[in-house]
Image (tube, rainbow, N blue to C red; front, side):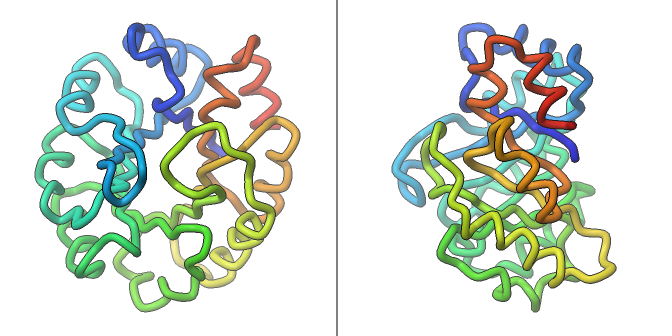
Length: 211
């Protein structure tokens, strides 16, 4: 199981050091939560920051767009250097078109579903995506506890994709104590915000999450 630290929990005064620390600990991806204050009740950062840190980091940029009508900004986040762009099922007007547009640009395309959205809604779009992101908390803020029913949705997504080469990612409430539940449900990539950036021993936290 891959671990992708969520930059929303990082020290923004030391972003360069934070990214280097992620790389030095043997991790290959960073999760970038883009929030617009409309789709979710919070505002974080946008394409300008991503473009800036792209210059000094070779990590996989896993960009999670928690914004309304993401089609308006896909070109910006592609140009900023995103390796994966995930849009929300609940926020897009034409999901199939968005996914195909992202893929045509040579970027992996993902779809996220909020806790109350069943994974079954994604079935018509499976052949157009590279990643399913299961929100295991209500999107908008870090530091929440994982919703047990949402962890079960990871297994449902695993069954839904069959033998397709689709990554299953989980975002929200992951800790060293419950990481095994995510793994056993079928999670391929685990987003860790507080569990990574607020850990006194980050190396130990990474080792425990992976183990």
